[in-house]
Amino acid sequence: MTEEEKKEAERLKKIWDRRKKEWREQGIALTQEDAASELGFNTQGAVSQYLNGKIKLNVDAIIRFSKLLDCKPSDIRPSLDISVGRIDKKKLTQHNNHEISTIHVEPTANDEVENFSRNLCILMQYHKDTPLTLSERCGIDPEIISDMMTPQSNDIPNLVNVGLIAKAYGLQTWHLIYPNAPIEILINSSIEKFVENYAHATKETREAWARIAEESTRYRKVNNE
Image (tube, rainbow, N blue to C red; front, side, top):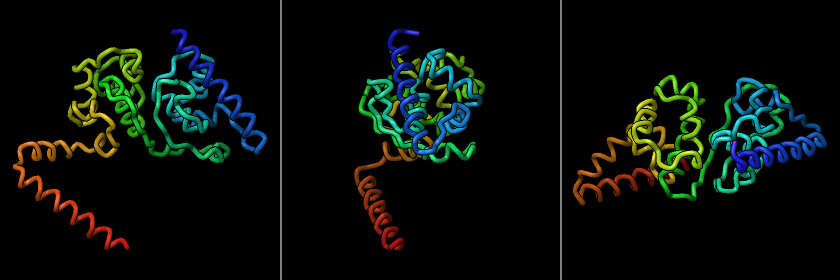
């Protein structure tokens, strides 16, 4: 691990210890076992390894811990300037392995590396994938996938690997490098057909589609009132 990666683990551990103390005073227990369930990890050991700097934190793990500990990803990795939702800490006492809520990500970087890493993490979290499960579908080594989830670890995404991952999710390559991509684009393969049709449409056709979309939106709002 690099010195910066060690510092990230130290920051995470400090936040963990602080939250554990604060929540204990509120009658809420923060244990590694319950955290593993909330974070979607298979065992408590994974939580311990992250907290003690035994394995490096990737973007996906940072997002998950940030949601659990009610902090910003940048509190762990200063360069990761995104916002995420949170997990209700009261659920830590219920011992339920329930689904982590959908995250809301607001990227600020526009380069392809940041876009790809962020989009990959969002897709993996949405589909409840780990580097290992995704590896089984796309044929890329789990370590490479883990590195691809961390922008600092790769200079330029390998387009062959990007294509393999896109294929595994039933998407086109451009989905994974699309800047500021909302989850609707990342999980909707049918949008590719719309983009293709829009690209070949005349100006009049595009304007007609825009009017139809506006009328459709207005109609739905009226019906929902």
